[in-house]
Length: 470
Image (cartoon, rainbow, N blue to C red):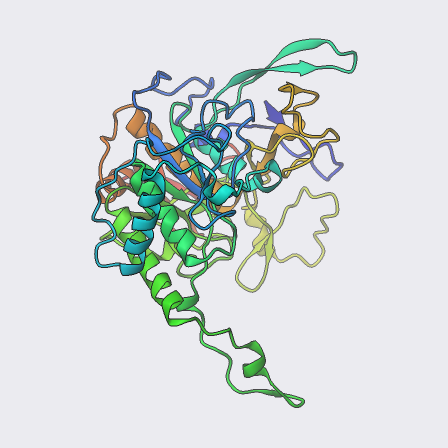
């Protein structure tokens, strides 16, 4: 599967392997075969809890990957509605949860919430909390579908219908880093109440997740930047106009407990977080909670040439993983796409001559049909499970979200193949760093996971980067 851009330009955009990121990590060999590992599934499979949007579970490459019984939606209801559990009317008291846990000790709000949630599940209640159906339509599932596919998509063969109605078999040879894993999707909205985030991490712990992935930022109102000083604009006090609504004492306590809970959970199993896409000096929250004393792993992005992606801070990540790039033109750096059709070299400083920009994107699974990042003229195609086209089933993706998903899949594959024994977050982080390589360049030093040997970057020769094993 190759991606090409037919737009006219001073040079033709290079075609590239849609799974280049797996080869750069060393997971796949040059011939796209597993690089020293088997595709056999372990029993039980490695369980990855992803806290993100919902996921398009009927995507051909995700069928059988997402655990429909355990996936929980916290967008629609306070104590969550189970996303795909039968018809929502069956009792759910027999879920295989770790009922006895001390993970919330010393956290009164988390403890209260845990008690409520366990009571709800143990009294034979129904999957849809108070009858509220989960908000898991594919319309809301774009980001989660991309991330889930990068972690654990499996190659599949789908039925395709052409314009004459003829049905043929269409191979979709796409895969995530660990196609043997099991994903439990825990969906929230993008401006959640602290209760839903507390419950998301508590639930991931209850289902005994081997890995937890949070590929986005969450609010951090207890750590906001200092307010503006008094400045008068006409008759209006700018400070007063921009002042945040103060948190209620109970909410402030819950946000504080959330940070404590994330750290506590990370010591039980790794918590992989995206470091952010705006060159954040200390990473976004909660990636910025990562220290040598917990199991939180902050992940930055590196492009297909082996340079730090322009949007990823060189100092805010535990490790870096393959992703896309972005143009930048400021006082710090000039990195422009010289193959862009409207590129004009007039006025561009000589500093752009290092040619650090890479046009390679990470290719991910997308919501089929009109939803998602790659739209289709056809409506959702789930009713008969037959494809009218397959372009919308995949999309270009990137950012530290993609990089974090790849690191999560890398750790999952290590557990699934026995290279890493299921362990706490500190041990897993130490293993990850021990199986990473130091990449040094004028854009900063980076540690990048490598399955075997020295990483190889597909977008041109390396003239600046030097790679050395750690």
